[in-house]
Length: 447
Image (cartoon, rainbow, N blue to C red):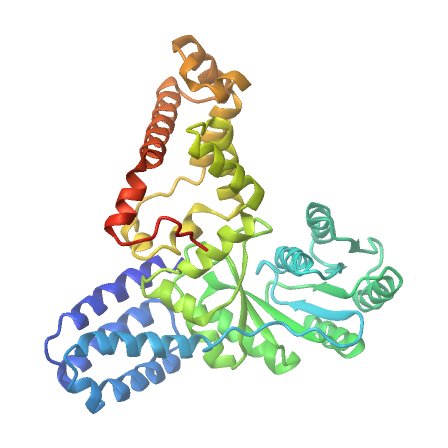
């Protein structure tokens, strides 16, 4: 996510931090470099100019010029202004006091509206609501079927009328269905086109007028740069939507749409979608996104994802097994599944400070966890529980069964054995000795 712009900005910021003395001249030089980076990322030119002007005004303030660490203060100013550019604070979606709440999803074809509709349904369902998905994209082939598949996957009902070509009637009928079936939220997946046209805008305007949604979310493909911003402005002029959803942020996005759209349209970004999986959806936090763009990572989101996926009871069982030095391949498999549920490796890596830029240009093999999983699943229960029995012939059988070369199987087993040794050493008291040296009490627990 934002690897290119992030690495370029990090280079500029290192130069700024290294300045022993800040003058108007070296501030101008730094801002010129930042301007070039932002233009390369396809950020709107007016947004760039306003952003840099605000940074310059604050950077030339007396408290910065007389500071003993002026470079670091300017970096903080850039971070603050970037957060402001992205929206300053997280804004939640609105639900009406009347039941059901209506949420309209709008945008161009190919932006990821239908997938986002499913993700949003899953997200609000996990927060205690009872959504229904309304299939109102009557033009795109297989759109209705796609929504049905997603609904089945997340166990949310989908209201569809396969032969009906009246999107407005389907939307109204979906609301009636929700009232009769105790569903408190209707998510309407509207039709998109390859480009904005009058027929499309008339249809979504009619649906808006008829159903009076509590929230209209505009879904935009973040890989389309300035085109996305222009499209958003046209939609907003017609619909006055309430929030923006950035999709495909896990792809090769330059960042122009994300950095421009809030300032141009003056509507908050409410969600960021980082992959095809149903769980790959995050509320949009401007400060956290600024941290990712500036290469500082986003540890808070990383921890929140971990908390969502980690089973507390399983964690307690694992803790007991670690104390008894009984960590085996079954436990390893369980941990792998929880990591996979947290999202793609590339999206997780982008949350770790410095790691995303360090891995720039290197391929992150998303299938590595799948290969390890295949190796473990090709073992017998005895082999998983007691890896010491894994001799040469067993390893060859596992290699054939998992579709991996024998060298890969040996490597995975060796990594597992190293992990076991590390955990065993901690349990022998090395961790407690280390904690003692750091003046950490022995009964200390991480929350």
